[in-house]
Image 1 (cartoon, rainbow, N blue to C red):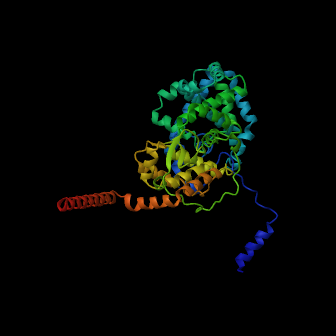
Image 2: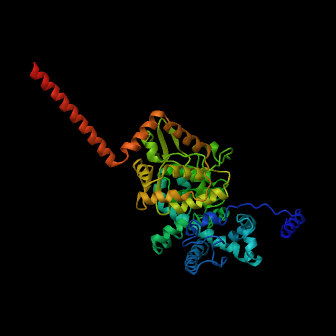
Image 3: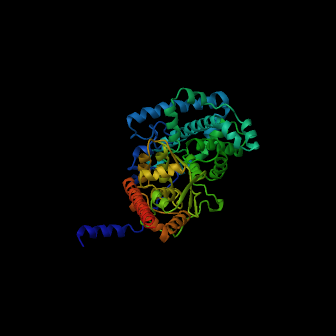
Amino acid sequence: MSQHSEELGVLVLSNSSNWIAEEHVYPIFRVPSPLRSIAPPLFTPQVLAMGPLHSPAWNPNIPPSLHSTYTEMDHYKLLSWQKIFKEDVPEQEAPFLHFLHQHKDIMLASYGGRIEKEYDAFALENHFVNRLALDACFIAALLHSLFQENFPYLKEKMAMEEIIMVSRVCTTAHIFPIYSRTIGRPVQKAILQDLLLVENQVPLIAVKQAVKIESKCRSDEEAERILELYVAALAHRVLPFSRSRRTVLSSVKNASSGAHHLMDMMYSIVCMHSDPSSEGVRYQNVSKDPHVMDMPGANRIHVSGVKFHGHWGSLNELSFSNGRLFLPKIHVSDDTERYFRNLIAYETCFKTERLDLVSYLHFMDFLIDTPADVGLLVESKIITEAIGSDAKVAEMWNSLCRNTMCVFSPKYKAVADSIQSYCRSPWRMMWAEFYRSKLSKPWLVASLLSAAALLIMTLLILWYTILLYHHETS
């Protein structure tokens, strides 16, 4: 052993009594570099910085271009604060700040001690609560305005008691005229995208309190129900899965219980189980071998007789029976990759006992190998696309699972195994092989048809010759 190694061994032994404390991942965190390095801009707020991680006042590493954009949005945060506390409920300003100061430790815990390590006590005492107070009020006003826009549509699926409750709260969204008239539509869209970034979250306890004051709720319970309706409007607007408004309203009620922030609620909505008893189950004894399976692409299993059907539901609502594969419909747009990458980071780093999202993405990655596979799923009304071409959709799906382990929840593994067993039927394998070798290319099909036509013509000529010979000899 070298002298350096001996010294290192002595150092380790001498410090064996001072074990390094186990690190935990908390609800609001910076995305690890293996995931961030794939597409850094997709984890960075475009226009709206929420909380301290991307705030120019807290983070000196913000690029100048983003620094000016974030600072400009701070103007709208202050404006929403003034609308709430200077015009409507001025007497609630001090109690609101007092409430946040009382719960400062809880909110700091959402960041897992990172804020205390990176910033001094003065900043924590004087700026942390004020920053979250402004952000929470802006989120409350923004969600209120979004709900007002979608209320005519959501009203059709709301229970009568919910409609009555909504009619009692403040019906005028404070930021609505400003948000809709002075901010361009591209910026409005970017704001909604920024609300669902894993590094850009505000503890839900602050948002609930801001909603209670902004919407003039009578109690904490009413504020929680109003927040659920607001989040339902947000989910209906931004999430890529096609779901009925009634389904969104019912799933968001299950998502609010124990949620840490808005993105946590969105994750629960996206991953809602059709069987509520299986919600949050820890998946055990699931193989994490990257080569656990090799399911063929959509076109290959389609040739084997599998029919694809799309339906409205969450990503856990899939099934396979009698050669029919039912998958949730999904709308793929230019912001779908951003949502999925942040949800991947949240599940793989914080919801580590869950395999819902990763299972779905790997399953779809197996199905989508080529643009032709995307075309088949579009034709089956499983995918609707708004990013230009089947090739771009295929490229997106094939890159989403990079730096993630190929894992499957029991439900996805059961469906995948059923598909493989179905496609391994001897006659289906023979037909699939014949199709790939003889019918998969246009010129082969043309050659086969030409040969068939020539054979038929030859048989007809032979038959006509035989008839003519018998006629002449009779």
